[in-house]
Figure 1 (cartoon, rainbow, N blue to C red):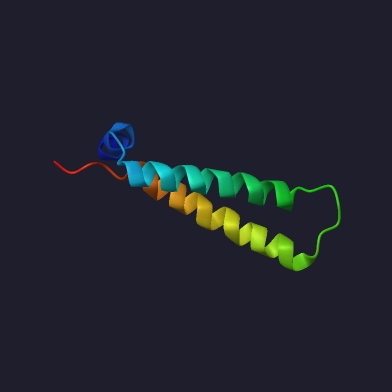
Figure 2 (figure 1 turned 120 degrees about the horizontal axis):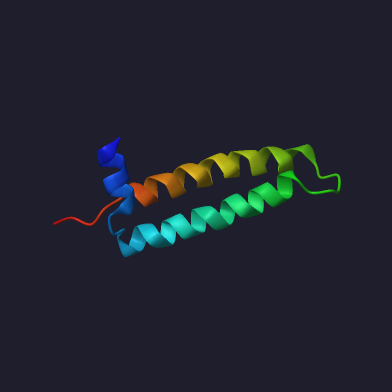
Length: 69
């Protein structure tokens, strides 16, 4: 557990910072679509769910990437 916390707190490479931020933006968009107060087609809701999972995984993995020595 300590190793994970060290990785999360270590400097993140520039590419993975961009990937993390894109993942967070996509997660926000998918959450907005899933919780929209208007009736949306089922396929859009399904895609929003998949997008939320994929963007969450991409953000989490990007956060744990560290710069090499």
